[in-house]
Length: 81
Image (cartoon, rainbow, N blue to C red; front, top):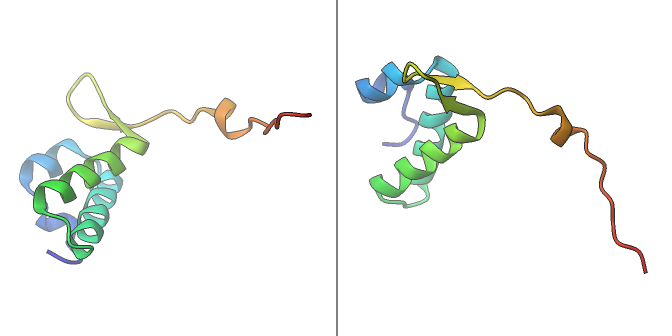
């Protein structure tokens, strides 16, 4: 199923995920399958890719995670001698 579009995703996924999350899912699914992964493995990769940016809401629909600026602006501290 290379280069799968969001229109080709199963209805349950399209109903749960907003458009951007569907794009992430479809791209990750296609990439994983192009690399020879099984359907099950590719779906797991696709869901994990979505979970990096989205989380399920109380209504069952997925919402973008709030950005954690503390992580993005954290300085790197290395150990000394």
